[in-house]
Length: 209
Length: 319
Image (cartoon, rainbow over all chains, first blue to last red):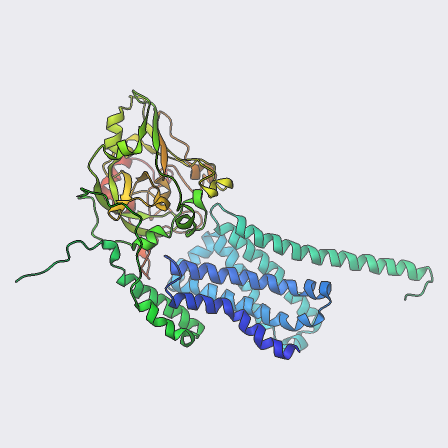
């Protein structure tokens, strides 16, 4: 089932880029095309990061466990759009001026946050293969991949710090991220409660069902 | 030899370069994606001329001005579809759509504060105070982009002279209309409405400071500040208030809106200055709309004649 879905999802993930290119050829990127490309790729990086983080809650809440098969692909698309976003900055905004970029990273906190978000995604993309999971061991691999929470948080902060006055859009992203993190905290607490409750009942000598 | 010249070509119709540059930008993006081929047939559309839509009434008797630059004028479509006009929305394309039905007549401008006679002037009476001039100015936004606009108006000093400020008048404060029903952006508290800006008296009296009611040979479009606005070309764009309803002369420095919002980011003076960075971005360069590469930002946006207004002032402190 998922085998047939994968190419479809893959193409769907490419759609935002396709639309950007289409609009480019249509001379429809507005008065400041480079800004449109920058904001477009940035938005989709955040969206894909949040989608990646939605897979686990979604599959548990809807009991659609097969969704896990798409998590890696969607996560890698977050990295892909992040790369496009970074390339736009390095190339079309700074024209490879290393000195200017270093000054930017040091002085502008929104750039610092953005670079942090990207840097945190690199090890995740590099260890996204089955081989890496085997090599690292499931537990260590999972611990490493928790970096995605920090990357997403840094990405949202990057957006909040960038905006001059109207924080509505970045705060929408922040709200979704907060909900996804709260879900994890809630399930974690829930699991601990169940474990201790389980212990309590087993000491009472009632066998578990 | 007889050299024929086009009689009345609007400078804004010259968009070929922009299209060309756009195409190059987009090709880069496409190459990056490796999907250029897929969109190949759209090519023809890019190469066909772009349609231009004008707002309305032509202004008669426009005089040329020695203050005009001969730099390439930015495409009309860009100047009317890339607006920082938060009263109509914080996205740059929003004002073009949301200001469509904005009513600019009847329109009164209140003149008060330190003046001999407080009064309300009709905007059409103000417009007739002096002959209209075309001033092709560079316009630099604090966000790092710039445009070249053929504004129409006359020096703000023409109005100030006629309303007789008293000796107490050290500053001039400009207030933008506050009309939530017509300006959807004002329904949210993004800024402290109404929008207020101000100038020191000598800045306001400088001949470059323009009271503006038109552009590209016509009435000002709503999204660009109709019916009447300020244009102060050596300062960042936010100093140039739009849709002005009140001009007040004051003894104390007016509290301008962006300074209230973020005092460490936006000063009162806001002179274009490549050496003083905005805390969140460098001001050394700018992107001229329609151009691919950035260009260096000039001190006072290239209007060196205002430098004497600030002699002895630390422009780092008074940013």
